[in-house]
View 1 (cartoon, helix red, strand yellow):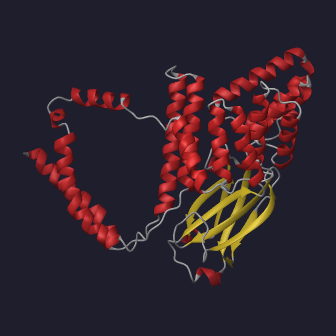
View 2 (tube, rainbow, N blue to C red; view 1 turned 135 degrees about the horizontal axis):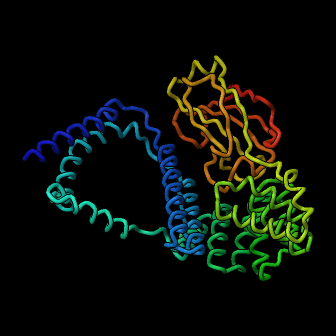
View 3 (cartoon, rainbow, N blue to C red; view 1 turned 90 degrees about the vertical axis):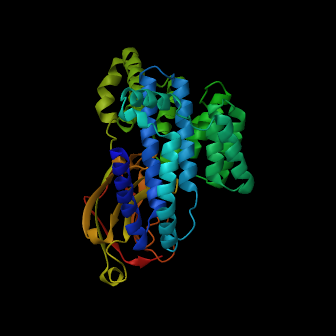
Length: 410
């Protein structure tokens, strides 16, 4: 009996916590919360995959496949538009919560709960192990391919969709079809380094890994736009090694090392390749320090808003401070979220603020930095937002301090 009294008390407390914000019609920032949650979940799943790989539960091929699925699923979720007006639904949602939560809680507990755990704690450990073993995997490559092709049938001009299809086909070792998909993405979004490197990789795999010729030309053109893009430096080093240009290969791979410190397996592989080159040519080791000048990019910003626009906004309005590539993907390379009440503020953007581990600030030399006030809380820019942007910032050699004053209306 005491158990049910405690359960009812906790249920009443939960209802109070849920209903008060709804009844007050608090402004809900659903899109941003969903994106942040998806990114956090993806990071946790990536850590789980790395732990499984380290423990030998999956091999490298399984890890690569699962990680690709994870990246594609995250990209699809982030690109999905959200609709609806949460504030208008607030009061109806409050009524629904007040009626549904108690009923659903009791029914679900009676169906799925295990009250015997109170008397026998060993049942909790057994139940947890069973849940871990039954954890569902990500979508299979075949399912991902079908989903992306369906998306492209609705919007054949979707460059991101073609890129994702190419990645999926590469994982399935269908290199000819991957080349077609990447080429289509490259035609739709010209001069995007990530697509150029992916196309070069697919072309090389068609030739049993031979990067010489068109693949290397694509890689070098991509590196002119993004000199510190990890995949580009890796491929450039491989091409140089195939040409027997050990010095160039050593230079590319040494520049790559500080950009992949969050990937221990790749770091060990690159160090092994560098050691092999240095054994064949001891003079290469003397150039390592000079070639490794690249590193984590850091931008020091001071963000404020003009008095005229500040008077039109609210203290709790969301402020997004970001850096994105001048030529490349539209997704920010680094982003921080504040509120208007925080301004003026001094902050730093770096690789630690990346939304995706493969898209870092240090991967692109020329970037755009900006700040935007969103009254809706939506991270995607909308008409009526207040903003400011500065272009052509050198991420490798930025100004000591970058001043951003929000003074424009979108």
